[in-house]
Length: 460
Image (cartoon, rainbow, N blue to C red):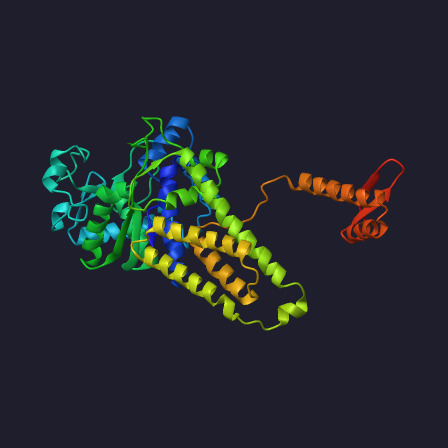
């Protein structure tokens, strides 16, 4: 898989997160099925936006790209997005890009003008068909910038000639830097080969970025190479409007994570099909905190039941098979698993697959509440399949107690001592002494004084 990564000049926002969470779920599902996924996510670390931001702040461009690359990767980790196999950066592949351009020029697909190199779209039959665009409409509309160096207004830069106050690299056409579209073709094929399985990105990249990637790849490799499948995530809107700085409606990921958990945010993103537009709402994420709580409740109940079934090492070593009474449970688990796979195999239908996971969680909760005896092997089957399914959505990563642990320990100990003192007043000395001995084994030493019972942690 190759997914178009960020241009690192600002904070990661929820629109970016929607795309990267969606592709993380797709990757996790392919791994769930047993595929070994090589996942490439590029970093565009030199671009007009980076240069403009650096000039605004009066700092070197490398400071901007380095800082926001670091912030992007921190946000990805915070969202439980698995690390990519490779994070190629444009600046680390300039020589590869220059050589790629040289070949395109030799074949007549590109031309030089005043130190810049442009791709000639006239050389590609049916240019615009990938994005279902009519060339006449593109030229008539204001979707391409006017550049007197271009032979055709739709031609696009493969190499941009150096301008004052801009970084530059050497090339046969003079100093400059790579254009946007060629970088992804070069990096994708360098690490995945000239024919690979999945190319992904946001819906807003279909034109011009992906249209131009396809044109470059056809010129360099031929018509039947490059990506087998193209997947595009739908827009994430705010009150029906596309996020933009001019509308002041961009929400950074870090702001969402101050209020809600990353796992609930992931479930919220999964609640819509990856190709569909999703209108973002902070309040809507709160619903998925409750869904997440149900998923964790099922997990915790299962863990508790498994611990109960393994009360000693001797018992652990015993061979225990699935009892006849558990057959219905195994049949139900297999049915849920088949349903989950069926939904995900249908163009990664995460809303329906998530509904199946929630059914699984509620089924586990009902078993724990109502089923008297479940064999250890059956519990292990339940746990294994449940965890594997949940991990596709990137949840159940940790179990943090929803309370202050130190405060809880003190309150529980106060309660235990209060109960012990009740038995002492009732002169039930055996019970009171047993509580004292059990606490001693836990490293808690009791001292009954004239006015109160004191306790401390043992130093040994």
